[in-house]
Amino acid sequence: MNIEIPEFGAVLEARSTIAPYLPSTPLRRYQALDDLTGARLWIKHENQLPTGAFKVRGGVNFMAHLPEERRRRGVITASSGNHGQSVAYAARLFGVRAVVAVPNGANPVKVEAIRGLGGEVRVVGRDFDDCRAYVEETAESEGMHYLSSGDEPRLVTGVATHTLEILEQQPELDAIVVPVGGGSGAAGACLVAKHINPGTLVIGVQSERAPAAYLSWKEKGRVEAKMETFAEGLATRAPFDLTQAILQRDLTDFLLVTDAELRAAMRILIEETRNLVEGAGAASLAAVLRYRERFAGKRIALIVSGGNVSPDGLREVVGQAL
Image (cartoon, rainbow, N blue to C red):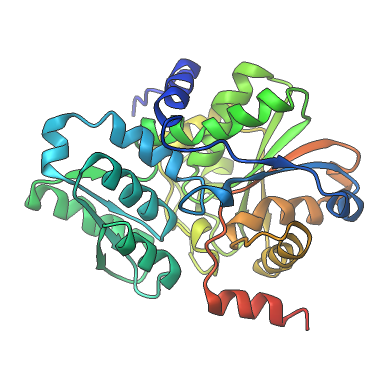
């Protein structure tokens, strides 16, 4: 399959596109995290965006460029939560109907947020990939535009702006560590780091209990895998072609962490940064904690991709510390 990978110029265009609608997010230091890891860490707070997650950058960039004819038809997409919020948020900005298929058992905080933003929620199947199959079939029958959460270039270049902001402030970083579900965040980071400072490594992180993107990257081909993680932002059973093409070309390394390590990292980030952090958002810190020797003494940016943890999830994480 011939896949066209976006150029760096498309990321610059995306920044101009989203600037009127979204603020830059903070890049902060926390001495306690440095002491805990032995690294020099910069935390990129994507959990402080209006939807509580990085995905909204891509949603706004996509919707702003959607042709009028497709706006009239409306957009349908599949999501475990954060992507759906981003699509609903952006659709409301531009007056577009948005239908979001979510799986049974989806994070109720995210589902209610999608509805609150004006998105039409349809509960379908047992996981994200069931929703993905439903949306692919339904888009044509209902005459809507199918929006893939991983194979749409404007989503990737939109979320890539988080790394543009990071490297404009800290251009000499040794590495950027990025959570991976479908892979748009890590793919975007690769596009930017390769252009601004090829010496800055981009490292992806996924749960051992949902390793489809990791296995596809390692095997250099499409691999489907189990999806058993609690961290819905990391939970896909199958990779996306566009993001995998970028990761295959540019990603330095790909690490796995356990769900227990994700929960521990969530708790640490909540305690030390005073920010809500969901499971996927804690993946970068979980990796640095697991592989301390590798990161010790290095200048590392950690992308905290989201903070949309449910009340039950928060009680479980906090309760483990009591």
